[in-house]
Image (tube, rainbow, N blue to C red; front, side, top):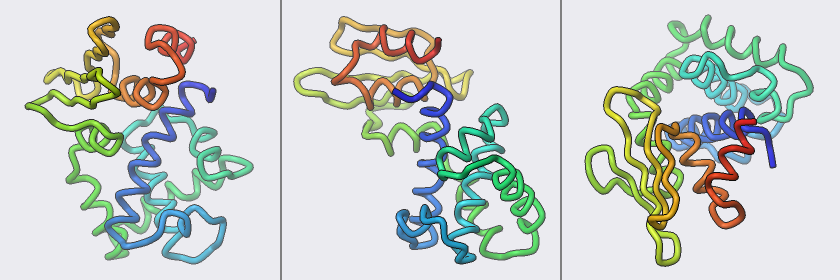
Length: 182
């Protein structure tokens, strides 16, 4: 299994790349190709810029790994490129504004299969069990996770919830969280 920071970076970059592709009407597979076509390179750069802006602690190596880059200077160049063009290029500015308007946490949970049940409560049925995420109002990323009334994780973050949900069939929740964070 990938390391925790790489899984977290993958979730963030997948989210932004999906949103950019939807907004600009691109195929994600085209954007992920290594080609230099400007609109696809810009989409990759915007996703990189937004991920780093939203989560400054995200590692350049994790971003480079996501895009199958050999090293991280390309990531630094992408961030700098968008920083320089965001007020000059209308398409880039419009895309950034669209992504900034999104409720990041809610969208991450919904994009990963959870359904909004109530304000701050998301759920997904897995077989005959419910996987629930309860967000805290005072913290953008903190949540409680419960599954099948047997597992309860207090003060996890939304990325833990998504990682657990993506791996629910293969690992018990407690073991998964502990192994990822070590």
